[in-house]
Length: 179
Image (tube, rainbow, N blue to C red; front, side, top):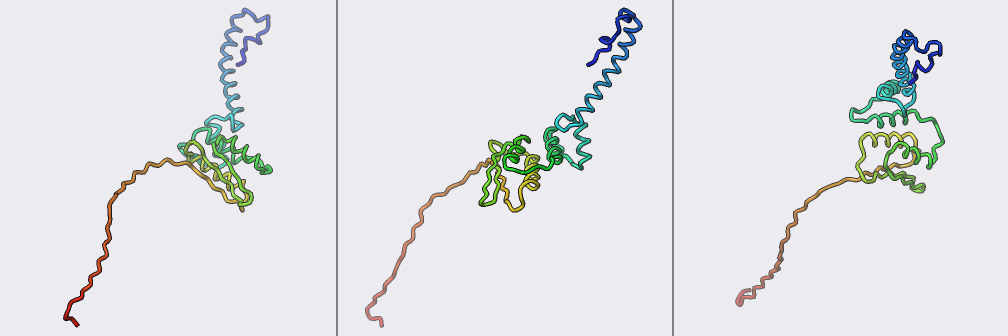
């Protein structure tokens, strides 16, 4: 923060009225600097605070989920504001990495598929929405996208063992005197 006392001319050094005047003005200057710093940081998505993100969301007509963190909301805004660029595979992978989405991307040009596999954890609903938006806007329409998520299941099976016996009986009657 700027200290007004540092700019006090030599001929005012030791003048009590000037010292008190500058100390009173220092509070106003500190408030102004705080406001300007907040205003400037809210001009950019990555440095914006809650107020700046809320303003950007209203400008872009984005409705955030109540469970989204500030960083997730910033990522949604960044996705909407992406400049048009040539979509190459390295650019696409770098974009996913910059958004901090922990997936392993695979593509098969012959089968025209892009596969994304989450590893080591279940994805949040926001991450899935971000990936769906990226896939729908950046991947060509003729490519199939697959999103794999790991799941944990607990299954208990009851097994029953038994013996079944099949007996085939053939009865032959050879009675004497019968026609």
